[in-house]
Length: 313
Image (cartoon, rainbow, N blue to C red; front, side):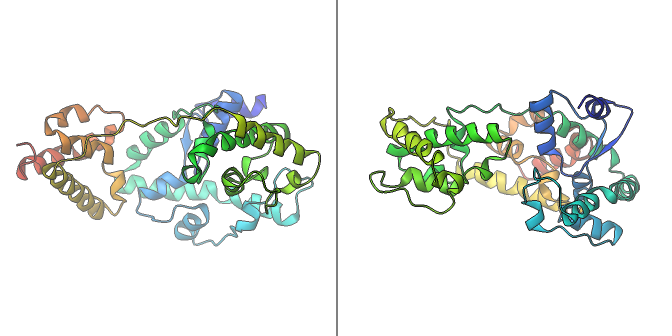
């Protein structure tokens, strides 16, 4: 991996990678490396007004080329060798048009005066941090975990640990071991009844079936798990809600003028803090969610809107 890692970290070589957030996390987690000098067409596309930012959609809209983005191939097992001809063609199409796409998007951004905006977004993307997996609490990320009987939460935690164990052992994504729905269904089940579910895969047979049953028994005998309580924000008062509606209307109007998603104009969490206490407006210019390009382009407009609408009173 050293030659690839060196290339990825080399700031003199631009890397064109589409929708790179997952790659950023994986590269940092597995290899401890950071992508330097990134161009992400998904981010760039959103700043020229393209609503659908999947690779196939962006290539078709910008370059007029239609590529096959088969969901079946996307979700297939790419660890199997040799790869099929269809898989090879799919992989080739994934990168064949990136350089042309980058050139076209960069020109559009420069013509619109937004290239500096996306450069900051690229840098934020590659600088993002990730939370390390913690088997004791990572099961809370299982889709549907909130529907599990609180008394059976320890079973879900035990099943999640088992799934992680085999995902690491097989070097496979979690869903290829047991999907979230199966974990939730098993956790919620009557554990005095036979284990009969679709989606168990290899765990429907010995010896893995015994491991699965042991995980269920271990969870059933564990102490009740106290779910972490998120600190709740105070309920917004009516006048604060009105302020927030006004601020969102400002953001929405700017988004329409620029033909970009309003969420790109100003972060929602920042607007909510301003709505709660307009005296914080100046502090918001340095908040972690607000970008330098947003301050440069929208601060005056936001301040005037706050003043004109009495939000600062």
